[in-house]
Length: 381
View (cartoon, rainbow, N blue to C red):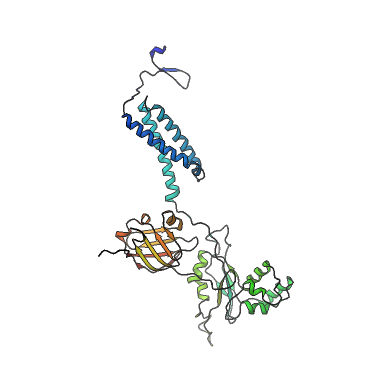
């Protein structure tokens, strides 16, 4: 075999074969189109290259790296063959866009199709102190979680519990063991008096005779004896708003309506923040107004109270055919805002709302607001 027989190509097994019969078209595409395709390909490769440091940190980082390598090799092949063999150029270009499209589909699955979780924010613990002395037995907070439903790694294993008036003998035993010369009866009267209000703050506790020198650890222990602590979870929040805790803190609560002589109605417990003083409060979801077309065409602004809580999904239902399950991060990434008093939903998250909806309500966890009319920002005259 001679060189005159044609151009030779090296095979994997070391043999040579003539390539004079191989089709090497050089005029399938106009030169301007070739340049345009190469320019577009290199621009897309540059964007992926700039994003690679971030893409490698994602859960599918290894896949992004493999696809990027394939993308680079395909682009080089396309550049080398764009003049000499446009057949190979088109094949390499197809492989480049195959890898590029795979990267885009992977990003779509990671960032759009999957819900974006709420950022971890600090919870707001509460303390419950029993302020009735006439209860026939301990009250049972039965509607709390027996095991954590929100964050098993950090939340307590279970929070259902019995509550009763602080035990003077138990607290006195603790005070004696700690070498604190104070009266448990005096402490209870100062912090959890019958009828309330509950005030188990550090200032109140250390203001009791004999407790001025109590350490931080001792103060927390006494707070737990006087008014046990609950970690805020969705279940606790709903119990506070509409469940057992709500019932026991109701001024109209009656331990036994059938009893003769009758009990005097009154709250059985006082609920304070973890600091030990003041009222612990939540607000049920309430919509004051819902405006379509504010602050921009197609957007919706909802104003009210209790519209968002930590780590709680919100469901916004528009009358008609649109139902959206939205998280704070979804709204913010789309350019909207969300707080306990207002929600601004960009038009991109609710396409079609302007033509199919007349009402809206908000559901926060399992708590639902009333349905209100969706009012146009600038109604047609």
